[in-house]
Image (cartoon, rainbow, N blue to C red):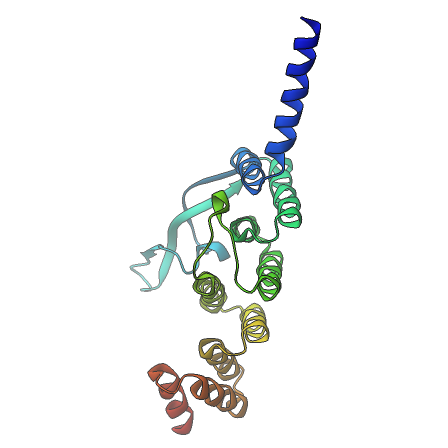
Length: 235
């Protein structure tokens, strides 16, 4: 009986250790901590938080001024900061052990956005860009599922962040996302077009034209890029 009991204990320990050493185990622990520390609900406020930009938002109109009186959106509130910290630490550990699990990067980036730390969010996205140069796009997702075309996943993520900062009129972070994108993906015309848009925002027409022309060289059939170039010529 004692030997059987000892074997059962050892089996339980080995099973626990094996379960720990999987990307899904880290994702599950992360979700447990995050659900315990972060609450989401429909929210109304006068100003939009950064995570609400580029999402579905109901705008309440001020009948006196015609401008917005407030916004209704999906809000996020920290109810237990220790749990949220444990959630982010769990994903940092998971990424170190399973650097090709793209869902871990995206989950961590989203969490930093929800808790109001956008610079850490963009830092995580940049880490994913660095890793993609190493793994040449061979990413895994939940359940170690192989992603067949990761370029589109990263492209959508970068463009979402760019659009979010752009709509929030955050020039510094908009430019940072644009610069990160062209650094790691210099052959994507859309990212050079973003650089041109940032240059126009800064009223630097010469640089804007340079970036738009570079974008057009990469994608000669892009009508948006052509329109941007014609716009500058008409100024």
